[in-house]
Image 1 (tube, rainbow, N blue to C red):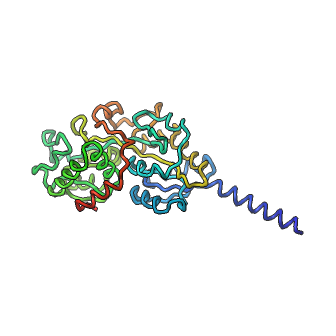
Image 2: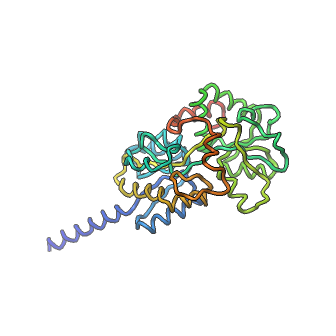
Image 3: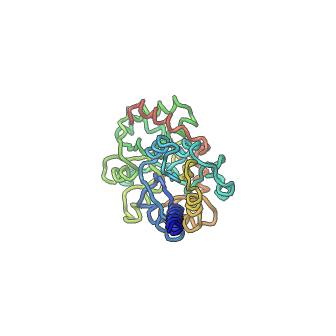
Length: 328
């Protein structure tokens, strides 16, 4: 009888361990509408159950820091490199070949996280109320009186915060603060996210907005006459910042193997092709068919400012600055 009970307990423990081994818990700053199908495909291919907690990138990064070693997260998928850099000490070191497979522009030298897609900051603008002569050459021009009340931004957005961090790295805290204060004084309109900024232009609320490159394609794909276009600033301007979305494995995780499988899946040709074509983003590996509606990666690299994505990690400093100027 005792042997039977012990055998039953052993079997139950074995089944429990097997079930645990077939899960992975993901904190995702990337939206469910885009990545939900990818997660489902990962589950179908691997048999691993992905439990995803969605939220803002900055919000989830803060949560990870607060939870520390008690966090249930195995992996953090962020929409910008600023949050990834801020969490470098929270992440486990990845196998060398993971970042070795990524295009050099998007590579994390410390190998604590890996880029999953590339994107750029752009100026979107009305095609109905503006001509080319009305477009600013630099993001700094937007503090000029002639743009007063005509520009939108989203200070709580993770990519915007990564941009501000890069501004601080490239030109110093005082320069970034002066620009933010100039924009506030120029009555820049606050919106919740990138999409609402684009819709505000179409609705005639503003003429310009500061967003990531991939949002506009979601509107023009549905309406070829959508009255908004996008353009970079002059070559080298900080407003043309190139960013990445990326993922890191939480050091405290007891389930690193499945987390690594998810990263491997995100870097697979099929997943990279999906992100490129459906998400209007840039692949981080070669051999992927580019999104025809986007400028080539070579063109984007030519106009981007020379800011190392690995240096964009002081999210706390940026949040403090945004609070100081009244944007948070």
